[in-house]
Image 1 (cartoon, helix red, strand yellow):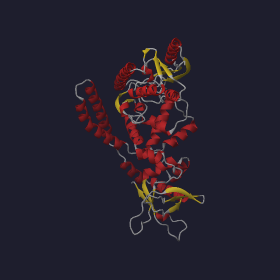
Image 2 (cartoon, helix red, strand yellow):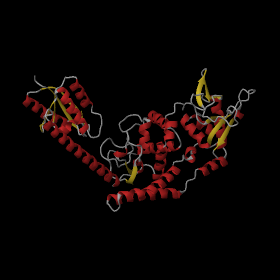
Image 3 (cartoon, rainbow, N blue to C red):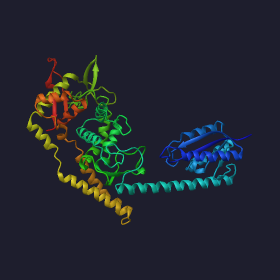
Image 4 (tube, rainbow, N blue to C red):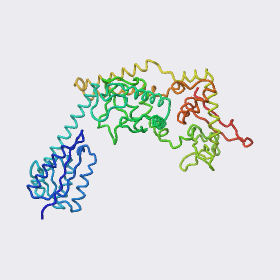
Length: 482
């Protein structure tokens, strides 16, 4: 019976997307099938997919399924390493040959999986291909590191937002959007809020698509927009690329924002608590969710419950409640009308901000020494010099690891200080007369309003209401920051 042959072709990189390497492999494989007299029933192309990287290969999986179903009993490829560069997967092919009588033919030479010698040759070729793939990956990693340390532009992909196609010249319209985005994040506004605003204003990504919080987060956390080059070794990836990498050099392109603002926004956006509690919150339509704390005393105890209150409607009326959630210590015994509470807290905050003394105290809470910026730059340069010393073999890897640890710890502490949200930035352009602030408040969204409140208030305790009063403002005890 004439073998039913499947042609499998694959190329690891196809930058132009033309598929020329795939076409050449298929042409050679068809010629081999014609010489052997095999019927080609289908071609399985995996274009721009690396076998070494472990990325999914949909056509490869489809081919395996067709072999198991009996639709294919012969496979033709250009070379064994086009099938796989994993010895483990090669053993799967050998097992299929045993169970299904699979024949394998390659343009580069005959391989008979039915014989011990043929299997040995296939394993040797597969091991050699794996060895070369690992060395290639190592060389590419070193090249990427060297390019990063030289501050060079990374190749491939679309242009970077904020820069022209040459990736060096600043595109001022987009650069101003980046500066605005950084200011708004440092003012504690959510990424989702910024994305909605940008969508309404027609600010889109280089691909022409609306911004999403995940993409905006990666853009603003990138050291690139401050004119610095960062490097993230693939060995440090778990499943996806980390948000931030190691800053290794000043870049050949100019920065859009300052080093200081970049360090601050990178730290803010890397905070897991911000992403979990702010970006992913489903209660953001309620202004004071999480700011309000239940003040009802626990049963038989003097101290209050203290649980964060959340927004939940009752009979169509928005309220803040202490959630009676199973498995938590929330008492579920406190509630307040959301609209009245929002208005009361707003008026209290605006009245406080009308006081120059209060604003001055807030400013004093957030002072950062100018020397801190210098310390950060010195430590960054020291890490660069240590990496260069190891690369040029003036010190060993062990010496490099020992030397960099205290520098990185000091750098982390100083960056954490910078990451404190600047209350001056939050309130800049907002503070004025009570009437002016009320007008500005009306034009804000809840994320921006919340930023104003949390710049002034740590938390607000909601105590039991006076049953003789329809509305009891005295039950709200504000813990002011200053």
